[in-house]
Image 1 (cartoon, helix red, strand yellow):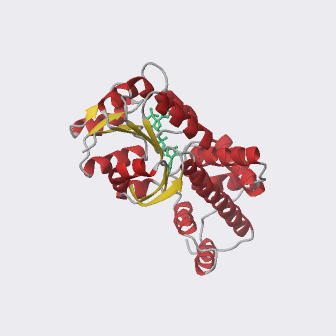
Image 2 (cartoon, protein in one colour; image 1 turned 135 degrees about the vertical axis):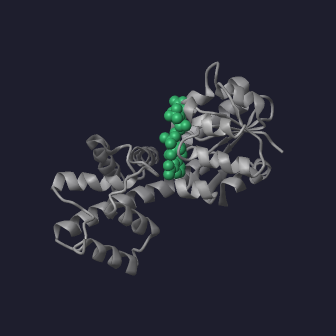
Image 3 (cartoon, protein in one colour; image 1 turned 120 degrees about the horizontal axis):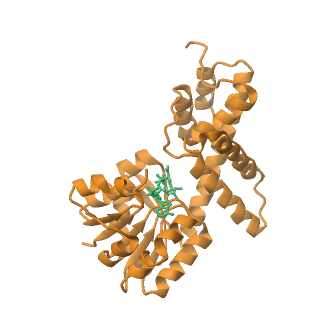
Length: 299
Ligand SMILES: NC(=O)c1ccc[n+]([C@@H]2O[C@H](COP(=O)([O-])OP(=O)(O)OC[C@H]3O[C@@H](n4cnc5c(N)ncnc54)[C@H](OP(=O)(O)O)[C@@H]3O)[C@@H](O)[C@H]2O)c1
């Protein structure tokens, strides 16, 4: 059984690591803020002092950190993964980063004799806990086969997206849609509220029609309950919209809806809601229009 190193025990990484461990893989974990490793230490898992130490002790190193900069930070330098990789070790990169970021990481890993799989995930904290994330796997077939058991502990389905870089592309594709939908939903709710419509009535009409989506049902209830505990925070959704627009600009593809959604999320961040759940984008509309979205006439 492969020993699995896990770097990045945040909202997503911690439950993913627990599921990998639950499937029988021995773990060695690292997190920049050490307190996040405590639950693992208490369960008897090995805690490393650096990404380098994780790489030295692992057959497969999973990385689940914030963005391109964080990926680079855990790879590079004396304490980084690259400094500790032994020949053939697999780096399984699962963070949401740019295609260029993951391709550069893959090249750096291969340069020191390692192997690389690009496998971001779709889904949020609940599916991460349940082991039901959608895995967007990309890399050579034999490597995907080798890490299949680990990926299966994290989620299902495992979608073969193609070559390294295509996992990141698929992730930006789906999160572009997610951010556009959340921005449009918040805007529509603000419109309806300003028109004096009943909140529960609006949700019922959405759920009964062709625009029905689990996203609208879940976030609609969260907004009504004033529950903005971060599952997928505004900051991370903003990052993904930014990455998608930058990628599209490079390809000469206009993304007018996504650019607008990115700016809506940017405004919500500017108002201090970056750490709250993505549903808090509705607060941008509330604040600029002096509305309170989510109150039902029955309540
Ligand atoms: N939340 C979701 O619903 C969701 C769903 C799918 C994909 N994702 C993606 O998955 C990734 C992780 O998301 P998350 O929700 O788990 O985020 P999170 O809770 O904010 O955790 C981020 C992790 O990255 C680490 N990190 C950040 N900058 C670092 C640096 N410079 N050096 C070393 N470590 C660094 C953090 O360490 P510290 O503890 O020290 O800050 C933490 O372990 C992101 O790319 C996100 O876009 C998130």
